Image (cartoon, rainbow, N blue to C red; front, side, top):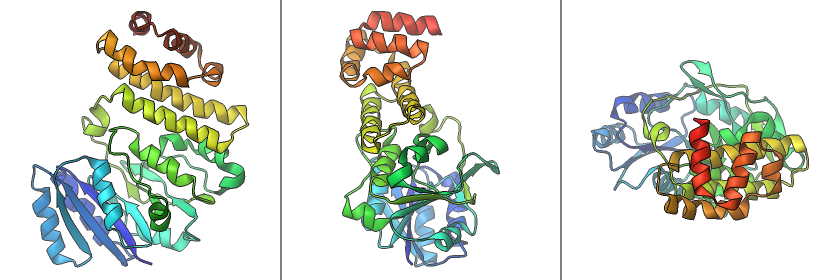
Amino acid sequence: MLISIVVPVYNSSAYLEECIDSILSQTYTNFELYLINDGSKDNSGEIIDAYSRKDSRINAVHKTNSGVSDTRNVGIRSAKGEIICFIDSDDWVDQDYLEVFIENFRDHQTLLIQNIKRDGKTISNYRFKNYSLKNELADLFAENNLLRSGAPFAKFYSRSIISDNQLFFNTDISYGEDLIFFLEYVKHLKNVTFLNATTYNYRYIPGSLSTSKNHSLKNYFLVHIKISEFINFSKILSNNNLKYFYKIDWDMIESGIDQNIHISSSKIRKDLTPFKKTIHYQHFKFASIGRKILFLLIKINSIRLLKAYKILLK
């Protein structure tokens, strides 16, 4: 089975060789590797060119800078394998990363997920079992906190599901695009299986784009809408599961407000108005006291009171 590995590269020369070497050291060798340079300003481009000359499995792709979503989409369109694996260029994988997936592969409608480790310690807290999406979709997310684990790495994606349903990363947003892709992908599965394996090494870099950038309220609104759509798709009946989904949705909404509270009142009023129409009774029911107040302030669209409330909380 041919696996297509997609690595988006942007100014990651400090870690890139370790990432590539870990992939080339895999015990499972039937793969093609796409190293996609997203207009890097360091010598990342030279590094991937040098590697591509040494190994015929490596495809070095150079493009103008357009963001990680578009870069991953280039990989999706280029991939020829039955399976697509995403690896970030500042991370690395153990030698048996692909082999563990291959040994547990059942069919294309079962998504395999591995643990993730940081500094040698497991940071994911999955239940090692198989979930039937027909009967356990809500449990799958609530029991494994999957709305917090939408990143594309450490997952074994079927290229046929992606291509047949035209699934791509949203290039119009800078936050939550990986979660949206994941939620759309899950809709086409029959099972999700968590493997008792931790072979993906995540490198946390303080001050990096993913940890330091503020994102627009419009961005958070789209993620909020996709979570709401997924709740409806899931047909969740259990209050316990609903509470989990609405808590994460509230986390998204409040993060968006906190990151944009400094902008002009007219701008934040305009960007917050769509939320007024899409938060409803369930958001109020499953909210904390503080968020119940936030709910009311959004509903009456009082930006002056909202800003004063946020200042008070600080």
